[in-house]
Image (cartoon, rainbow, N blue to C red):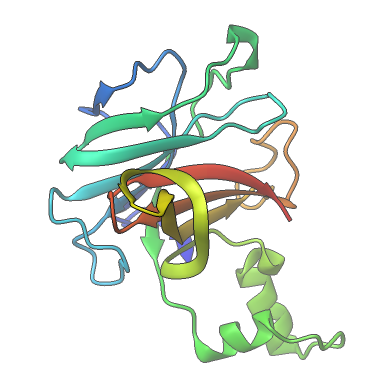
Length: 209
């Protein structure tokens, strides 16, 4: 779970300094959903090529919600492998609000309440749901879900040219904790990041739950 604190080592939003790009040109803004400090003992993601692993996404007003694929070639060195074109008026021009963040494992009680269908919650469970932003919290994990044959792989197999990718993070377009920063998106819209172990691509895409 992503939480926000002045002492956090991860960075949500803002403009990442010293970020460099290669591969495809980047004619549109890329927004920082979370720059993960992989030295953190609570980080489920390990990146041996540097300290920070940024989760970048081209926020757009277009119907597709935007998508991106890229690889990390070094510390804050990004190789763009897939990025859609967009008209200037479709860009999100502003950065997301910058905050320091922590990664905190869910407790057993928090995991239980997430999967509970009980309607009359105890006082402690009401508090837990509030802490979890009524189930709309930002999530980073190693293997949340599996996307077989969804994205174009850079190391295709003989019988398959697509990545078998694992979801590693998801960010609902919730108003918690920053208010209405997502414009036309609502909380049933989720920005998803997944990773392919074959070609090391990070895929960012948009889902409507």
